[in-house]
Length: 262
Image 1 (cartoon, rainbow, N blue to C red):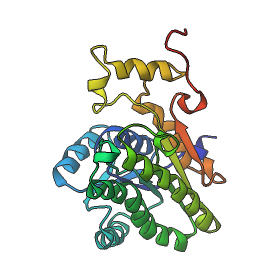
Image 2: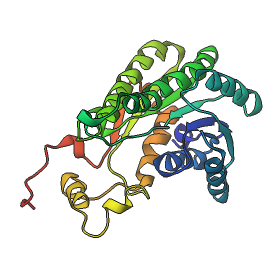
Image 3: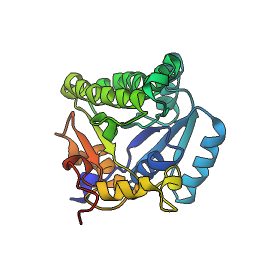
């Protein structure tokens, strides 16, 4: 049974995994035996992240490139496969969000979000996928969101990008399953990270909203994502394709409850 989830000898590229949930998922793969490859668009953040990974005894290789730059991605995927080895697992984690009311949002900002969150996974998957097709094996995990299913004020571009990523995931599975490539997604709910810290303390109303809206009655811990990540990256998911696993404490399963209901 342990062999189903063992990633020893596998190499995993996790884009943008320099902090937060991306780093938690990458660490999970590393502790399951995978050799890590992490990219970012700036060297300083990669250097800090590399130290964090190595402090836990994980082997990590870092590369600077922009996931939206077609030429740079192709060059670096070739370089990674030459210097590190074949990429067995790809996690398209890099993403951005711009919180602006739709009627006030500039088209350039909208395009920037779509470019990173939706075009980036297409570009990286294209070049990694070409090599996986040749080898007839591979695991691709796209990091979706609850905004792949729901709308929310001020995140029109983000929701559009994540909704599109859900359908890209399904289409990748449709086209590449015959090559023994499994493409699935993870949709995180609301997690306790450094980015969400300001809205989780001091009686912030959003903190109470999330706790009351989530059947599990708590924010997620980054470690809660590790199981789904390792599952989708491992032999255990060899016949799972085109699925989105929402790790959200049950939010998407319920309409919610009135504020005065226990």
